[in-house]
Length: 287
Image (cartoon, one colour):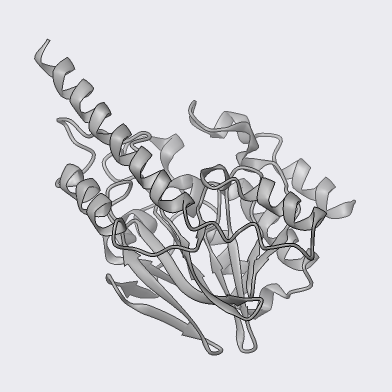
């Protein structure tokens, strides 16, 4: 297939450009699929990107890596949508594996980029906040057209996304919520940013000032959030690819993406992991 051949050629030098902790499947093409209502998955095997379609144009959330941008573009086309109809670009957080493709996607779609205030400097500077000197953790700089704050909404064609600030994983980590419909029922969908420690320093010298308090604020905030359809920038958080296979195998069955117990279970696990990691690293400082 031509689209796959073109993408494969673009990925030849990927390994040399990625940091050691990067996953091989981050730049592996995946079949796009319908999630629910007007929500589609257009990302790679290891990095999510979501297309929200409306009669007046579309909203694209996340850009994967620079090498992932052509995969996202090909997936949008495979679903029958036009790149030129993407009017708004959004980002979950300003880390290279989710923001790296935004510059190319912005150029190719002509869309406007909206981003949370805490991540604007990293997006426009092309760096990982707190690790500015790390070239492998950087991303192509991209201009932000609208600066968002907690609770702001993005509206297009009768569809509304709400920007929920859930900081820690990045300073402007944004979880995007929307009301969607399936089988005559209304559900609360959320693309949860992340709350893993990952490459962040949470003991001195910290990744950014206030990072520990930010993580804890997010853990408290998410306990009050109702999430019927949990989605995430990394599909393995909620087994999205496996759920897609289940939906394809039983198209008349219940939507497997409706999974209201998954989000609180993940947050409980992430909070425990954060506190354990913080305790271990703090103890290591005193040895």
